[in-house]
Length: 176
Image (spheres, rainbow, N blue to C red):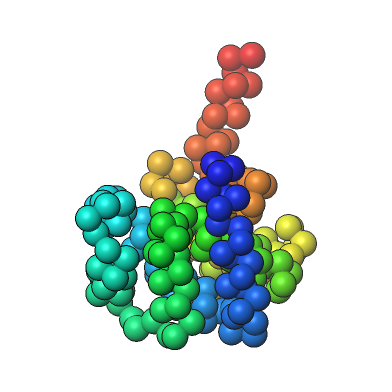
């Protein structure tokens, strides 16, 4: 959605500028805020004209697992006061992109049919960093339908070495 991205950009840029060298810590609490703000019931509550901004703030901070720093509290109040709670996940995404650009890194999602232990993930991370030519922040998500192997998504690039993908390639080759 271009509109949400356009709305979120100034918030992400302002927070990134204000966080400065503390961007990693800000990213942690911002991701937690985005997870809470993605709740549909909370957004309906926030959109209700009878609900005050202070009530929404109290509910959001009450649900958080950890206490927000002063910067986080001020940021949350600004977002709520401007009625932009629905854009919180996009703000977090754009903030993460700014942080990654500063560090010369990218987020990568590794889809695997099975759990990957820490040693194997570290080895895979080194191979993928060499393949993609940049530092990667790996996240692992289980996807049993892959049967075996992994599928890696880095931005708009996909590296699919899963058994499912190979079977699909064989199917296409046999039916052609």
